[in-house]
View: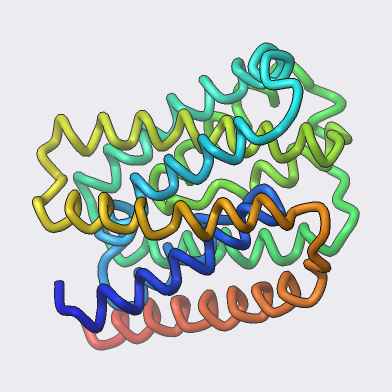
Length: 251
């Protein structure tokens, strides 16, 4: 990994950690697609895996009613974790550019659902079935792309979770998802010395940014930079789609 790439990704991770700290979620949405523009999906996930684990753990613990949140959301987090294990294994076996397309679609789904009142009747008509199938599928997508936030957002909207419940559910699902991903990558010998060294260094770097993000959570006017982030994500998703189509064409 050259110095320029390291500096660029470090800056992106610092910004993403501050955003996550200040609004409670969203860390993986920013660095994963940016890194994926220059590498494959597996490398993008490996480089952000340990930082994402740290960010979600700290964010979850920074909220109140931790025991209540664990009791309420652990079942969905476990189902999501199982799906994430399968998605990660698929990614390792078939590290294809199509996963970049899935990532782009996930981001567009996030941008769409974040600004609209979505109503999916299947959640109310078949609550038990959807409780198992939907988180499981969400975990698979998360394992393949490192981004399960859009689908969890839809789930939270449908079940009318409060902001605090929303943040706790997403962070717990991501937390267990990252733990199982680390395990799957480890048993498949996917981690390189470079990946581990990069992750350890960036964990130290983003800790300060995450801390200040959490500190200003209740005071910062986040509307403007959330809009800017959405614009950035839209641009990235379009680039990923164009990149996928271009690679498909030249091959």
